[in-house]
Image (cartoon, rainbow, N blue to C red; front, top):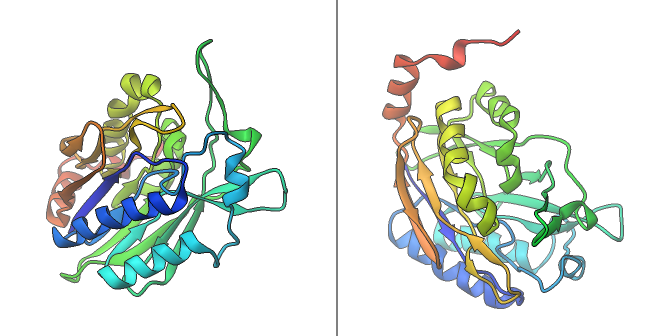
Length: 271
């Protein structure tokens, strides 16, 4: 099965970002991709963190969700909608949510980002909890590729990457593919992005598909990019440094079985 991490440089205007996402999804479909994942905040990178509040949608309704469903249906793709802001009980917060749509245009999975990014090095400061309400449960979904092969996919978002216990829970539940839509800062991405992605693949003997924001944004923020597809042995199959791109790789079920048979690390239990 061919899967793609779609790299974007999202701006502040939702419709411009949706147009950019549609172009990338069409390109992916033309390349034979079946599973296409958009990055975190694909629909907007606001001028201020609080801009998310004006864009929030009710689960099951809204322009962004309608766009994802229509694109999945028209292009015949499994689409992982990066993240978008969904309403929660608090008027001052949103959920940072990944939604998955089947080729029929149905929403088949939802994951609300659990771990919220906080960083302060004296020059850059981020505190997602000021506007985002954390989720509380992992999420996975099954999918069947066009060749009939069955895959189980584990969801995560950006800062989750630093918490290996989430990915081990996915692996123990049978996940073959781990998705990591992200908007890593340039500072933290340069230091840790690739090593963490490859570690999560190696530890869990799973494919990792990591779409990212990559470049200088309209709001002045610079993201690391380097969207990639990693195989279960930690080999980077495809990567792009910056700019909008379709970063595609082939997920081989036979390769997955081979790696897990020769190194049965998932059979071990700690404590």
